[in-house]
Image (cartoon, rainbow, N blue to C red; front, side, top):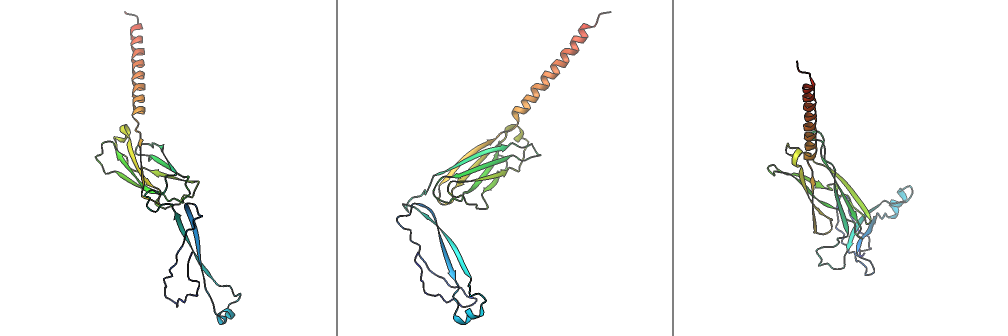
Amino acid sequence: MEISTDPILVPANTTKAIPFQILGLESLVPGTHYNLITFAQQLDDSELEDTATGITAQNSHIVILNLIKDTNLDTITQDYNIDIQVTSRGIPFLKSPQLKIIFFNNSKYTLTPKGEITVVKHSVDKEPEYIKINSDRDRVYPQDSLEINFKVNNWYLEDILFGKTAYIKIQNGIDNEEINHEIEIKGFKGELLGIGITLVIALTLTRSKRDTKLNSKPSE
């Protein structure tokens, strides 16, 4: 890092721009690197005599550097995995369906995933539901993962039969490449069909037993 080492005078209640330059050494491997800039308050002799211990306050700031081999690249890294799951289909109009995204970073960069989930109903006659991904901008360090859970709030009658589709767009936070996924939140058609078949069988058995009883009665 290159910065002037001469004392910098900043009068009280004022601000001052301090230019500096950070140079990446050729020996550094591509990836995310951190640089700590520390500013110390310099007191003159009279001010030091007024302090009890002579210790002065320091302010520091961390600078995050993403070093790459080629500055012309549109994609810096693809070394991350995204796993999307439907953890719960919910209970119609009582409990929201739930999705989970696991973002695993196996690159040498610190990534901040971002994006959006668009949830669309089967007939596409209503406004989709939009859910932001990682609105808190949590960082995912190399060889670490981030797990985020989401709730789908809107319920419609046709969801019970046909379910919904969730379209996921996500970026790694350091380049413009966008990953697209889609996942189906299944409805309850199978369960309703099973209930219907069970009712038909139960009614058939009941009617059969009733007919058997009627036929078994002796004629007068």
